[in-house]
Amino acid sequence: MLKKLIHKLNNKHFLSLAGNGAMSVLAMITVAVLYRALTVEEIGYWVFFQTVAVLLDTFRTGFLQIALVKFYTGTSKERANEVLGSVWYLAVLITLAMGLFNLAFVPFIGYFKDPAVLVIIQWFGLSFLATLPSGITSWILQADQKFDKLLILRVITQGSFILSIVALILFDQMNLRSVFIVNLASASLASIIAILFGWSGISAFFSKTKACVKEIYHFGKFSVGTTISANMLRSADTFIVAYMLGPAAVAIYNLPGRLMEIIEIPLRSTLATAMSSLAKAFNNGNKREVAYILQKYAGTLTLAFVPLAFGAILFADIATGLLGGGKYVDSEAANLLRIMMVLAIFYPIDRFIAVSLDIIHQPKANFIKVLLMLFVNILGDFIGIYLTGNLYGAAFATTLPLVVGIFYGYYCFNKHIPFKLSLVFTSGYINIRKMVRKNLFKK
Image 1 (cartoon, rainbow, N blue to C red):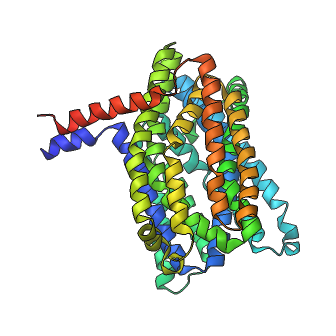
Image 2: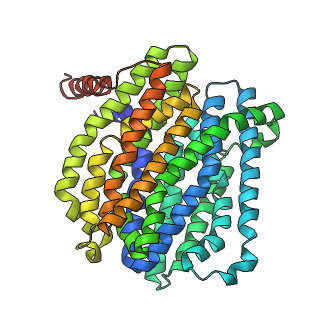
Image 3: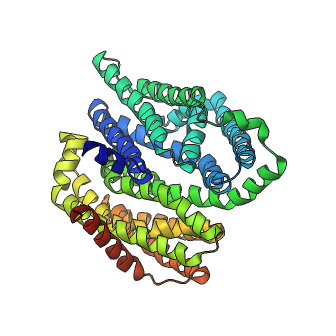
């Protein structure tokens, strides 16, 4: 019985979900510890740094990750090495450019008085360099669908960080500077292990070719714009809240955002496994299958998120209190979580349409889609916060870009591969019913 269960769970879907789940659980534990160990202002600076770091890292990730998966997956060993070498070459160039840009500000650090700006100048360049090998490794493992190794890499990264934070607290060395040091150390450890275990593909560096570099560049110039804009879309709220309401408000707004991992875990996991299926169907000329995969996965997650959103509405106060501690109990955090979770029901439709646009060679349409969402979100945030004078304005404003993204993305995708948006819900219901029958009523 146990052996049968283990065999059943040993598949790419479960391992992808387990990897994202483990990462998110460790991340939430880390957040819970940090929120209790640091002041509200310090948490605001940490969140601001993480937001900026992720946004800038998006240039590297957006330029290369989708390109690696697209050109590397299912190819010959010679072609795979050519792609890996070219990706490494471009990644090193991007990392050096970002590092030198950061270094240019160091001589003038005395002129900056804002602590939020200072932490970016002091720590971003080193952090960006430390995450280079582990970042590329995660793309390769995803492309190869080796989610067991990806799980190990993620646990090493986040696990070493949380253990270091606990050690700082126990030895009474906890402060914001120490957090940045152990964050850098954890990223470096994961990268070193990735290289030593031979997962990083760095040995293929000299297999790069000028033609492949050019091919990846031309594909990546649109995908990077999409990814950067998508991260700016997620980060815009943080910047605008910090500007209009201050760092303490950033800490409060970020708290329910961390709890949104309950949605992001299955969403990221399903996207990771579905991407290769979408690419395979499209490369084989089976456009109907592309539409079916999009409808099935997006519909299944959309319907599955309904009970999760309902649970969040009921238990939002408990969840935010457990994660953030008593000082956030009487804040807007719980109600913000309720608003975010209801809107998140429709995230799968938006995300799968976006990924599918890239797969069918329409990265420009996807880029325009995200730019429209970003513009609407920024405008909505400013107007919402101005009218309400609190965080609810920012939360409700996120409705507008979601609606714009879904309908514009559907319009663009439907021009190339026709399908009905309503079939997302039908296909999702049929798939859930099949899964229930298979797993609960199987003799």
